[in-house]
Amino acid sequence: MRATRKSARIGVCLLAFVGAILLVSQASADQPPGPPRPPQPPRPPQPGKQPEAAANAMHYRVSAGTGARPDYEGSNDYDPFPFGSLRIWWDDGRYTEMSGAQSSGSAIRLNGNIIPNSPIELGPTLQYRLARDNVQSGRVDALGEVDPAWEAGLTAAYRQRPWSLEVTWVHDISDEYDGHLLELAGGYEKELSPNLGISLGVSSTYASDEYMDTYFGVSAADALVIPGYSAHNPDDGFKDVGGRMALAWAGDNWGGWKLVAVFSYYRLLDDAADSSVVDESGDENQFFGGLMGTYER
View (cartoon, rainbow, N blue to C red):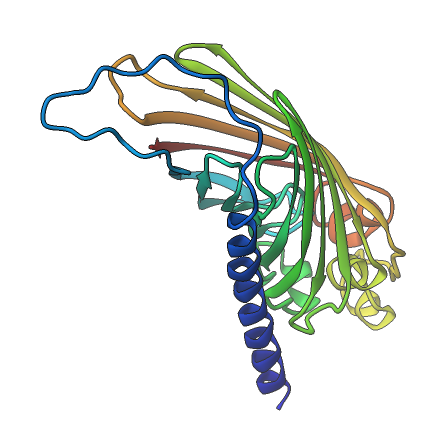
């Protein structure tokens, strides 16, 4: 019965999420256009071609690769892991993107921007948080599985290249931990040369009591039977802080292709780091690294 209620709730939220994007994006598209761009010299007509009408062109970028990540949040054991991203955007600044959350936990994020022609961005966010099960640590496995969780919320950002500031709030909608997360992030992007670009970011995530208890809590009963473990009832607070770096390189004749190296480091904080899940079985230092190919047009 609980699984049925969870599935129904997730389905309703997914439909509402998709509907919000479609309705607000259409409303945004109907708004007056932003300030006109400086006039450009006219292009000479090409034989057999009609002049192109002005359009809000769509672009996309798809990335895929492989890397290594901790097999649970706080682990010191690493597993190979496929990863990637998909971004679709328009010239007026609206976009939708699927990528990873910027924190020590593993979550796939779908978000977007519905405000055109503005450095301020706002849009709905949907996340899928990966399960904690069948990890290499037998003591962590003895605590029981943590099922995958669906999370929904909002992302707001301010971007004035090369800098950006971003805030993401999500709440569990799958009844897995019934809490919320608030992620604060800043970024910097720059082209170092015609063939090389760099992206840097820093972030920290505030987690509710419910999230902390689900992923870092140890009950008194578990502490009695799991060697080396102590009972732990963590409070809400900032659970991690860290950063990421990506280097993108393209050859002279690669067209829209690039090779991207990604690295991130997050340090677990306070009650997250003090948990036996981390202190006894894992490591407060969390790393991720990988290599992927990217195509953009």
